[in-house]
Length: 362
Image 1 (cartoon, rainbow, N blue to C red):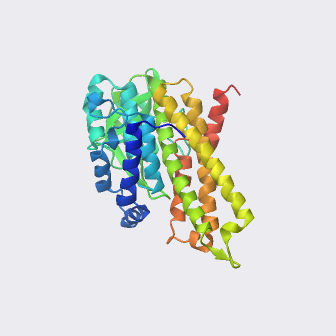
Image 2 (cartoon, one colour):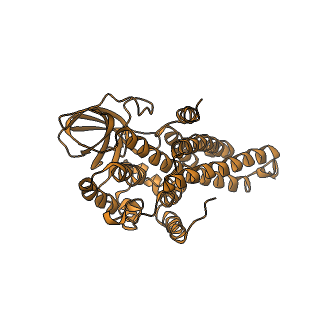
Image 3 (spheres, helix red, strand yellow):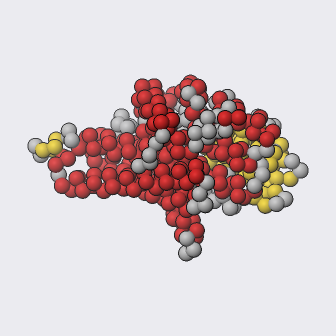
């Protein structure tokens, strides 16, 4: 487990307190049942922004706190525990990272303060098919405008700023597009986990390039992948703890089911996998903060391990709860659906195992 400084401990404790008091799983259920198209509670998001969470990785000169990626990961872990829906990963981790890494002084001055205060929501528009493949880009940038289509853009339905990958004169790079541009059209996607996403078509939308090309794209993706991992970790830990509590109280055949050796073995497997996954996720976030050259392999290791672990724990949560775990009245289904959505986001286990192997020279 990472050794936290005082600021990080305070951030984690504040996030834990807020999620438990203001955003328990019942709040997510209420949001889901309301059918709100953006996939999150706007009032809750405003509260997060007021607490400074949207500016954690943003430099102080642009209105942020510059506490680093591990610090934002700690917040995302607590949000994951209660399945709190927000654009924190897409906007404060994804769009903000792209601007910090590749934005000009003018672009940073225009957008980062607004992202930090939560008045602007950013989103990454990267993929063009059914699976994550950032190297497959048919969207083009020419004459200051972007044309093409993007799929599964998380928080893309109402995002004020779109960070779009496209082929330009120098190859694949990232471009900024205003959400209200006349050349942008969006269609809402209904995802299994009830979060917000959209397919977006660009028809000659005005765009500004970020510097760094494909390098900025990959670095941005690794940062948002690490953020997704942190949220997955929190959700998986909570799913495990909820299941463990159930094993201690559910009685079958005159005994608490937690006394059955077969279930003890399965619980032990989950516990050890979660500890390994935590080490991988925290190592990836710390590597980003340190500017380490092995960020890509550590991020892919974390995403692959966290995907496998959350998949296992969410399955076991449903199975060990028995019949009640199969119903919508119980929270188990929420964690299982969230697991599947997170596994696919920004690269599945197979994508990242393959990427890790290529980085290692296989």
